[in-house]
Amino acid sequence: MRKSTGKTQSGRKGSVNGRRSRRDRATYRVVSGGTSGHKTIVARKVRQKWGVSQKMMSRLLCTSVRQISSIETSGKPPGHRTQKSLKEIDRLREGLEEVMKPDYIAEWLEIPNEGFAGLKPIEVIERGEIDRLWQMIFFLRSGVPA
Image (tube, rainbow, N blue to C red; front, side):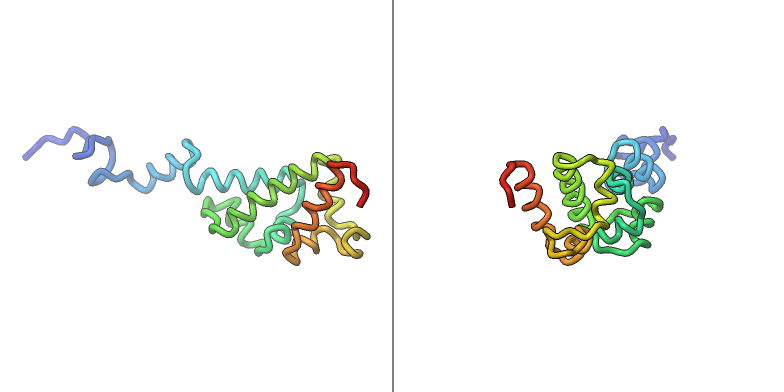
């Protein structure tokens, strides 16, 4: 019988058959910014940057409040569509910060806007017409009257 050195065939200490244990993988994700740990932090940070509730964030991402809560608290990685939406919404916030005060953005989302035919900006996003917001940002950046 061979004496155990604490290392496996692959040379990693504490692994089974060259693979990390579930606990080690979870620690690795959070510490290294790997898969789900990093995405969970990003989702919460994006929401905090917007200064909105989980309910409003669910409207921005066209998903449920339960899914937002799950992404933020359980470490469960968001799906591909949600990841893509998070990135797009974060970019939109950055664009809006160039043309208005960051503290005003959350309030602005709920105010009907004549530029959007009386719709609130959040409703424009929910309808899948986020390009209208980008067009508004473009005109405000360039100084061209709309």
